[in-house]
Picture (cartoon, rainbow, N blue to C red):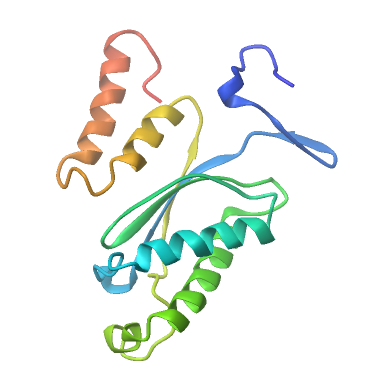
Length: 165
């Protein structure tokens, strides 16, 4: 069901008594910014994210990519769940399962639980979803200036009369 002014790439979702479009750009960093997301660990993380989505079908992960010390997700969350709850679920489930498979993490993190830092970055996504997807897809390919590229894109839109956000 599309509303006036809404394109198919911004399709609404239905749930119970609500219609919604709630997408977020989520970034989670590894604890102490350790560069551990390599050597097969990222593949395991992807598998754990797929398992998470199978257990929670109302949550959709549209895009995932990483650099060595953080992960980017484009995620759709229904309004009945807060984004902080979803982040907690994601961090707990992925940390526990990855910790079981990769015992070297006990030495990296001095035997402490979890691979994720306490904080996270989250931003709502609307008109610039394609820019966010490109940014996530290019993680790890361009070491420098990725954030600058994202903001340059917004400045270009502003210069041509479009909305920068």
